Length: 309
Image (tube, rainbow, N blue to C red; front, side, top):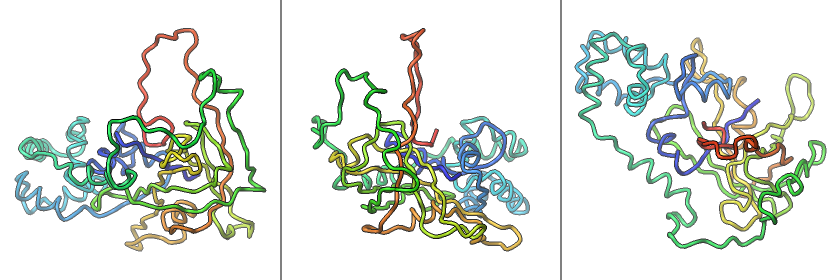
C-alpha cells in the first residue's frame, strides 16, 4: 500500500536539505527506510552539481567521475547534502574506494551546509507564510478530554467506512522538499467541515477516483498517517493534513517513468488543486500506549505517526 505521509517542522530540514526521502537497499541508511516503506523503486540521475563537486572539490579524476556518479545513482544520492548524510552515517567506505572516500570527506569538511532552502520551506508551510510567535495560540475548537489521559473512551474510530466515505475538499497542496531532492513529498491539507474527528497517531483512508484496471472495480482505499494535530493546521478543527510521497517507477529500459506503474493515490493527491473533492474514510488505529510497567522509562520518538522515521 502507499503510505508516505510526513512531516514535522523539526524534520523538514532533513527532508529538504538532506534528501531524507530517497533511497533503497538493505543497509540501515535513512534513504532506504523511505523506499522500504513505499515499496516503490525510484531512480533519478545524479544532479549536475554532484559532478561539479566531485571534479572541483573532491579531486575525482575526470576518467572516473562517471563511475562515481553511477554509484550515487545506485545508492540514491542525488546531491551533496545526500553525500553528507552518508558520511555522517559512516557509509562512504561502503560506497566508494578509499581514495575517493577521502576526497569526498575532505571536501565536505570544507563546505558549510546551506539550510536556507529548507528554512524557506518551513516558513512556506506555516500559517500566513511565517513562523508563529512565541505566544500561546488558542485553538478555535475544543477537542480536549477530561481527564487528558482518557484516550480509549473518547477515541474516534471508523467514523466513515469504505462504502460510505466522507467527501472533503483540498485546501492546498505544497511541495516540501528541495528542487534537487530525489522524489517529491507534498503537504496536503484537506477540509472535512468538522465532520471527521481524529487524534494524533491515527491514520486516514483516501479513496482515489477511478477504477482498478485489473478488475474494473472502484479503486480501493489507501491509508496514510495523519500529519496534523486534531486541531488541523489552522487550529479550527475542521481539516486534516497528510504528507505524501509521490510514488513513481523509473524504468531503466525505457529510460523514463512507467506511467502504468505509478502510485494511483499518491499521484492523485500530489496533483490535486484547491477545491478538488476527495473521499476520505476513518480515522483508523489506536494511539500508541505507554509502557505501564516502567512509567518512568525514557522514550525517544522521532516524527511519530507521520511515516517519516
